[in-house]
Image (cartoon, rainbow, N blue to C red):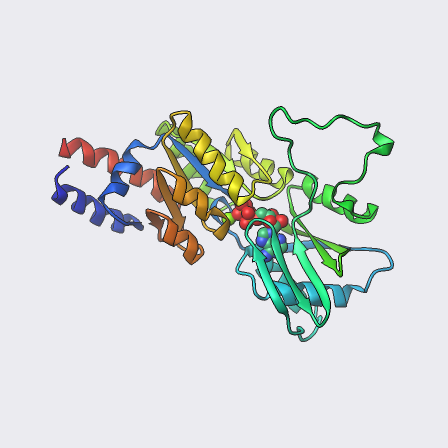
Length: 311
Ligand code: ADP
Ligand code: MG
C-alpha cells in the first residue's frame, strides 16, 4: 500500500468523524468480518434513567438507602452511576456523605465505605448463564434457592426488570440487600441503520454485554442481532474475541467502557465511541468521534475502496 493513498484515506476518515490511529487500522477495517458490539453506551445512548426502586421491607428507609447508593456512585463514570446520582438528587435525598475506600469494578459495580458502613451498588449475582457443558443438576422448584440470596421482594424486582428489558442493580448496605434499582436506556437512533449496513456489508454482528439477559435480548431483538452474550464480564468479552479469532473470524470490537478495554485490545480492530472512557479510547485503533455507528459502515466501505485503488 502506498503511504499517500492510506494517508488520504485517513484524512477522509476524519471527515466521516472517524479517528484512525495508523494505516494498519485501515487494513483492519478492510478485512473485518465480525463485529462484537457492546450494549450500554455503544448501541444505546448510555444516558440511563432510573425507572423504579424497590426497597426491602423493614429496611433502612428509602432516603438513607438512596443517599448511600448515590454517595458511592459519585465516583463512577458508568451510566448506571450517573443515573443513580441524578435520581437521588431529584428525589431530594439531601447532601451526600463522604465515601472512603471507593472501588469501581468494571462490569460489576461500585463499593465504598460511609463511616464504618460498607455500601455496594452492583449487578445482581447468581444468574450467570452456565458455561457450555457445565449445567447444574436441577433441584425441585421448592428447594431451589433464590439466586444471589435476595429477599423475595427484591428478587421479584430483579425478575420484573429483566422481563421489561431493564437493567437492575442491587444496593447492599453492610452486606444486607436493601434495594433494587431498575434503569432504562435508549437505543441510539443511528444503531438501527448501523447494524443494517454492517449486515449488508457481510459483517456478522454479535452483542456482548455485562448487563442481564432481559436487557440484552430486548436491544438485540430491536436491532435484529441474533447472537447475544449477556452477563459477560470484561474477561468474558475478551475470551469471546479470542474464541472468534481462533475460529478464523476477523474481529472488530466496538465499546465505550473500561469493561471493554481488554476486548478492544485483543481484537483485530478496536473501535471506541468518542464519548467513551479514556481507557477505551486508549485501547482502540479507531475512534468514532461523533458516536455515530453509521460511520463504521462508511469506514469499512472507505477502507475497502482505498485498498482497491492502492493495489
Ligand atoms: P455493558 O457491557 O452493557 O456496557 P457493563 O459491563 O458496563 O455493561 O456493566 C455490566 C453491569 O454491571 C451493569 O448492567 C450493572 O448491573 C453493573 N454495573 C456496572 N457499573 C456499575 C455501577 N457504577 N453501579 C452499579 N452497577 C454497575
Ligand atoms: Mg458499555
